[in-house]
Image (cartoon, rainbow, N blue to C red):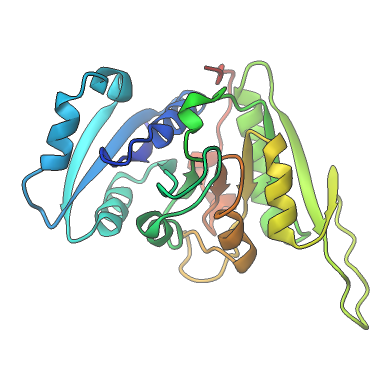
Length: 262
């Protein structure tokens, strides 16, 4: 069965960013694009029916498989769809309160991201109206074991983009604690300051920022640390968070050449 990329979509949100980012990811990963719309409470799908009547429906959903899920809440329905589908990646959008071009999780996305059973990418609001390319990929590193899987995935994604994307590792130097020798971390880019703020400012120069999971909690789920949780609220490019077992997940071992522009 062809692997999939799942996009959460709220017809009332007025933002195509999740589907646009998921479409780029599906092209890069040679995967099927699946759009999931949740009907909280399992009632009549009025919200999704309104999308059926919109003139731009073809542009929004062209080339996708659409699945409607009835569930007590949007987060529960999306999580169930991810468990059932086992996608390579899930893509969610930003809150309606997010500024254009910024990432900011709403309540549903926040509940889904932390504990998701697969890698999750968050699209900035309005991303569908931008360049939609993956030419510069950043990886936040801190010298821990989780760096390896994040750097490896960035390299694999870069190889699939034509022309090949640039990958840079990014480390934020924080003020050393008294009595402790600062850890030396190899990286292409060294920043200073509060990690989330520094990474968010630098993300304006990136097309994608990859974060490794903390590796605590349920194996195979995304576990956000305090820096990652805050960063996903202020970043200026799409942010991709990996699950704790990413280094051993064969689905992430992608290769080939695919254009991700447009």
